[in-house]
Amino acid sequence: MQINNWILDALYCWIILLLFGGFLIQFDSIGDWLSWLQYFSIFKYGMTALYIIEFKDRQFCNGTDPTD
Image (cartoon, rainbow, N blue to C red):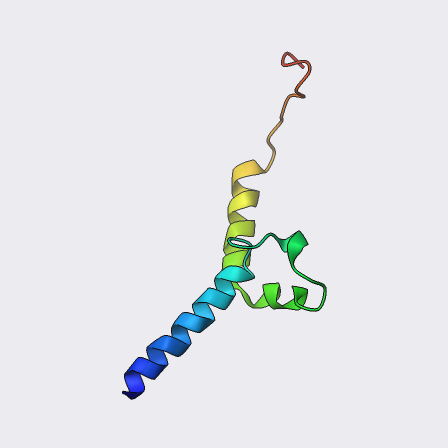
């Protein structure tokens, strides 16, 4: 029975990390009194690294003049 409790506790921790990692809730919609929890989520750092790798040094054209 003790293993079941451990698994349930781990599941709660993963859900909290997902919530505050930017997957399920946007960072801007998190209240100021809960915004500090995002720094505990490893998903936040992983997604930030993926964004930097993917979009670093990219040049985007503006929507009105695609030849620009």
